[in-house]
Image (cartoon, rainbow, N blue to C red; front, side, top):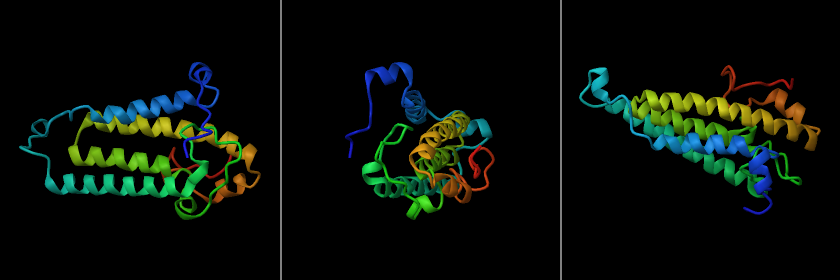
Length: 175
């Protein structure tokens, strides 16, 4: 499963396979370990409201489930880099029938879950930054997918990119 990802020292230096997108994504995900700021007292609360905390945990759980679904659907085509493996398959069923980048959607759901569960402005900033990075990474990835799969354009026109009807995260026409 981990073979053939195309990771190389040269790629880390010149971004030939989108390594810098991966580094930015991983850094933003890791930054979610930062402490919550502001603390609930900033909002005039003794603690963050339990319903919001619970809903945030549900979003986080749903994001983790979506990630597992996407991983299982990709199988041997899995790669952390935005340049797909040379002999990958275009998956259009399951979670890939609902959006073209369900793994990115899963990461955003997890991040949003942390924001809702904590009310943290720091984590809101991380969520928005992650959305921008994943949008860029997905666009980078789609350039190669169009070259590898002639039917990718038809798939892209009918299937949302990351989040349906969300400006910046749903582009259904190839520019």
